[in-house]
Each structure stands twice: as structure tokens, then as C-alpha cells.
Length: 215
Image (cartoon, rainbow, N blue to C red; front, side, top):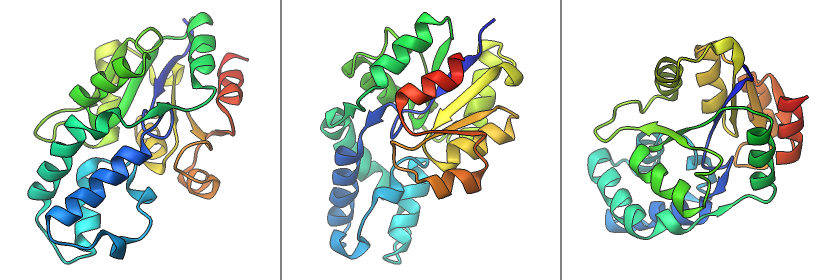
């Protein structure tokens, strides 16, 4: 059986930064903070949302995590969820992997119901039919737990599975489950971050990622 491929969403398949950053700024404003004080928020795209929101609010000495999450998600679920595009070359990468017989699953820290909507909006379902993400209420927020759940439900072997993602969280989660990983350099993580996290391979483009997997 060909290797199964677990794919991160934000920063790997989809450029969702504009909508997500707008939601963070909206949340800060609604909670009475000046978003400009936080500076560049790209670091907050990709980690589990509770981690990003908690870290961001801590910069203002604010511990209202639940309110921050609710405020963020109110805008995200109605507006920002559709403020995203597929990275150039990703559709060709997915087609190449599918045509080579690799089972593809989405493995995102985004809430699963939101991820399902994004996959359909971006017309990715034909390539990535199986979508896994965090559960409402906080279940599977930790990506290592999410990957373990995918292996269990899909009946996959870690040795014949590959995690593809753009942030250290993807790499660490793969390592925790003894899954080989490919760090991608077209997303929100940088080369140093992925190298320090211990990515097994790095890919500069979607075409390169496809070649690393299929050859």
C-alpha cells in the first residue's frame, strides 16, 4: 500500500492568513485592546487556536481566553472562513499524490466543522476526502492527539504515513507518533523553525513535496 499522506491546512494547502489575522484584530478590538500594539501576527497562524489566542491576550495582561475564542470564532465562522485561497501549485501536488495512489487525509488544528467548510469552499474534497480537526469543546486540540486519532480511525501504520505541514507543531506532532514529516517552506513557518523542530525533509514548492513523496 502507498504511503498515506496527512496534510495540514492553513499554511500548507490554503493561504488563510488574511482572514485569520483580521479575526485576531477584531477580537482584540472587541476586548478593548489596540491591535497595533501586537505587531505582526503571522506567528499566530497555524498553532491550535486556544494557544494563539491565549498567547496573544497574555501580551495585554488579559486572561479572558474563553471570551477571546468566542469573539474570534463569531467572525471567523461567518466571514473570515471564506477569506482564503489555495496556494499556487497545491492543486497539482494533490492531483499527483492522488493519481499515484496515496490516501490523503486533512490533519488540521482548525475545528473540524470549520475545516470541512473550507475544504468544500476551496474545492479540495475531490483530492482530500477525509477531514480531521479539533472538536468543539476542545477535543483533539493537541495535534499529536489528532494524529494518533487519525492513525487509529484510518487503520494506518506510522511507518507508512507522512505528515506534511508548515509549522513546528506539525513536525512535533508527527514525531510524537513516530510519523516521518515533510516541512513545507511556502507557508507560514520558516526554514530554521522546521529544521530545529526536526523535520525529516524540507520542500520549497508543492511540486517538490510531491516529488519527495512519489519518488
